[in-house]
Image (tube, protein in one colour):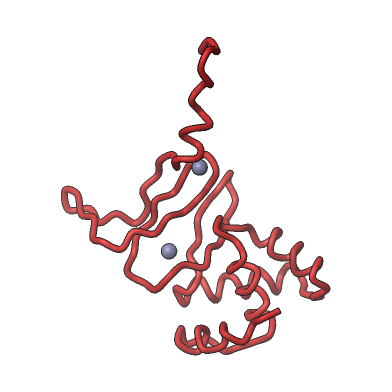
Amino acid sequence: MDTVRWGPMLEAAGIRVTSQRLLVLDVLAAHRLPVSAQRVHAELYERGANIGLTTVYRALSSMAEAGLVHVFTYAGEAVYRLCGPAGHHHLVCRVCGLVAERQEENVVDGFRAEEVYGVCAVCENRQQSPPGTKPI
Ligand SMILES: [Zn+2]
Ligand SMILES: [Zn+2]
């Protein structure tokens, strides 16, 4: 497991480097989709890291507070994503929960977009009925 590169990231975000945070970041980095605390906890367990769910929650929320990790809601549950540098908004697929980062300012009628919900290309294709089938 390569957790070395996460140290400087935590330091830059102004939070203390702990082995738990490094492990949690390593799990998040392996996912394109935001993941729940339970999922992070389960994967750490699979890797043989014995970290309690409460500790995982605490690590995630401290990193979310520092802006290092972004929080989304998917299926009524808080999910976390390791995003790129600050200064972006999100395009969130409401079907699969995929998050894409957009860098440019998106101000509409005085509102600055933080999250824009839609359907990603993969889900869009999946939703279209294959040729020859009747729509329900
Ligand atoms: Zn983000
Ligand atoms: Zn999708």
